Image (cartoon, rainbow, N blue to C red; front, side, top):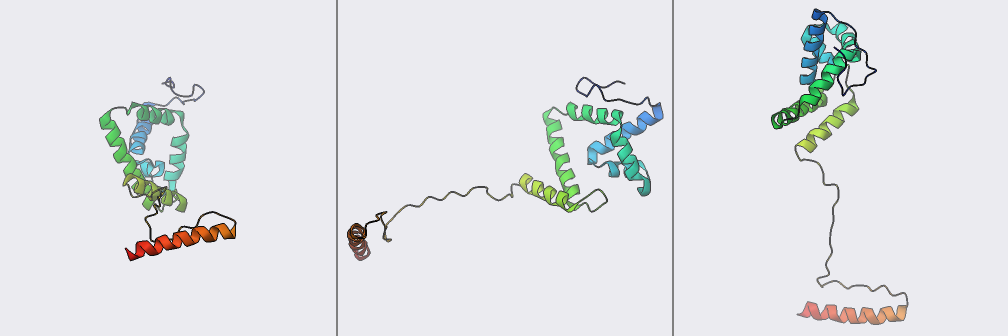
Length: 166
């Protein structure tokens, strides 16, 4: 099988026998569910000591990259969109709690942040406040001359006293 039309034409795929191709196909199916090459290898039955090496090998192969790209491109329908949202939530939940060899503190924090956005629990980005003058407070005009300011302040102060009396 050669690369599909949406893939890089320089991507090379090794010639695989049927058993090896079936192994890669199963790996891609598991990878698409959990989006972790290491965990996909564990589910395939690889021992933990070798799973990371196999995961790196699989993810570096042209046939695996092509199968993943074709599967991602095939998800176009509304049902596929809902399934994809569910998968994203699962991946984010997995990443938020992952403490394995392929995780980091930063990736956990980012995953938690994305989960909060999915739930609508993110903090508001901008707070706008409008201030209306409803009385009860003396407004200070922007006058630099002290004599003029005094005249305006006296008028404002008497208006303030009148509103308090009423």
